[in-house]
Image (cartoon, rainbow, N blue to C red; front, side):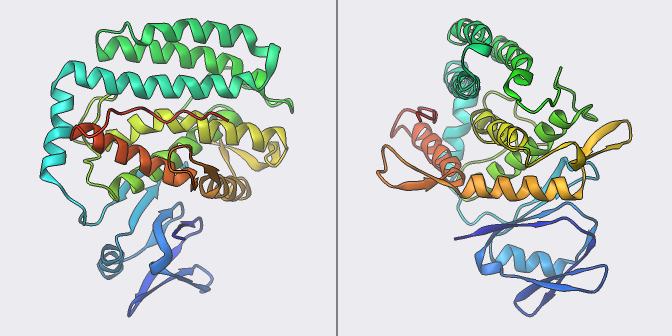
Length: 327
């Protein structure tokens, strides 16, 4: 099984023949098995050269870079080995046709709201009023006539969801409102960090298909971001990231001691970041029995299946239905 490599410390990534090594500042070397690697994530200050990039390209490995605060900064994407001009044309046509675009955007929002409600319903009557409010608001998704209206509905649902989030926490951790740059409390720090990981993971899976990651539907396509990752992330952020945050905090696997104040905000410290990454990988590699495929698939592969479903929708094989957890 392919795996992701997370490099948290400073050092240098070196190539020797057909092998990669990470050498930290103390001179300790660690081999990276490129044949079993899906992507590499840099969180520390890492030096490398073009020879290393050539090796990554030959093995179709994406390189994701995060900044000082742990936020996603950018990606080195090797030349795509899977391309289809016909699929890209059809994908673009679904952006230019407002009804086709609106349908897909509504699908992403529907699935995201479904997973928000799923997280909330697990707390029972304590958040019942919030569940009812979001459920009634979600009816407006189908009535939206423009992408802007739809984004407004999604934003309103998420605002109520975040108001209820503190009631989902059982260990006294406080969360009042969403803050990003910088996050003002530990929960916000986890949401920002987890969402960055999710965006990068989705981009890695899109890259393995013929989809163009810059052509999106809910989020406006632009020249400076892989906006299709943001669309698909609407489905998986509450399903994976938010539920993982609740599990780690409620089980006290992450505590106040795993955070630190920096530059007017709150960030995960080295130990906290390591714990979250381990839990994130464990969750992404865990499996569920797929109803249609009749076999176990990982959460990571569920993302690629969404990409495959979108391709089938674009070329007219099968109408797209977003993934919604049923368990």
